Image (cartoon, rainbow, N blue to C red; front, side, top):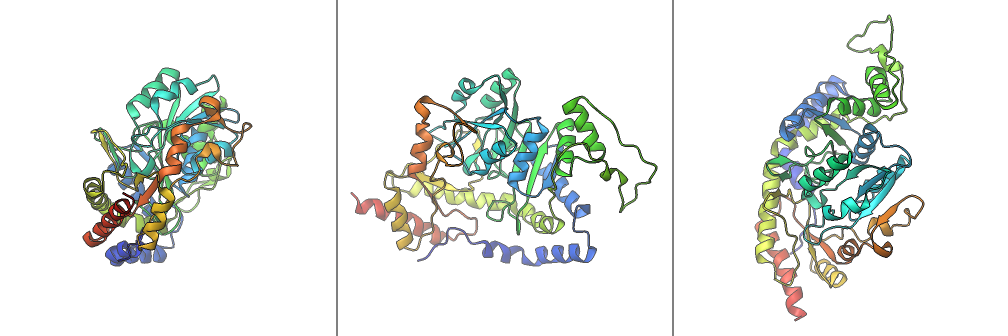
Length: 401
């Protein structure tokens, strides 16, 4: 049988009535930018994540850029991160003139190895940017401990981890700022691009608001004061109304236009109510894979304190190319995330990135890139489809015996 790698239509059909009614409500309100729909969704995310401030933005990449800027990362500063992730993680660092410093990952869970972070710290290091890859949180106690000892910010790339848990807390609420993506394929996905930055820090929250809206108004003035030591609050005789805010025309920083559209929140607010159910279904599928796949398949290993949301179920195979071809030939959707580790990408070289490793090599990241294969794990999969994936993988290995 054919098993898709992902089928968003199934989820849409389940929420169609409520989602389309919400979209219609937004359209009829003509409140497309900001407003109550966005704020209600942000408040729902604050409650779900157990955090004080959640601010929607245009996409997950913007979320990272906003977080870096809010933490005062400047050109020439260094940010320690993983090479085994989507390009946007390090791209965000480089895009503001800072330098990504790549540290190797752990074999067990594919996440950044906290035992290697301290050796990568220099007098230019400003922040650590761990990625909860494939929806499994990093070892955040160790990472936070190292960062605190060296006066560094911790910015979580939780783009793939909405709903994941670490010691009874939610991913994204474990460092100074958490960054999320609502790209349609994510566990909490919209009907287009979208993102979010979250924090418990009032000052960082103000800075995030400033940078996401052109460095303007009170938030811009306060943030400029914090970052540059110059605070000049705007003065105007004009009155602020529901539709007009005169302070928006006083700009204090070079920021961005990065807002989450109300139409996106119309869909996301419906899906958020079902997210735990979606993630539970993913966990059920992952548990079956863990138990039923042949022992020849190398599985990820997570600690007891980790509750993955299983954005992807990623195995390792020394026959990666052959396995992917076999799965495709037998109608089983599959993916290869990520075939090129970031320190090997042509976009990065010695002028705009640094490798914290021996001889310019990060062996575990390179090995994972050569071996990892993603199996279908979307929440609407049927038992028959899950069994088909298992049977096909096991048959591949049996035929190679």
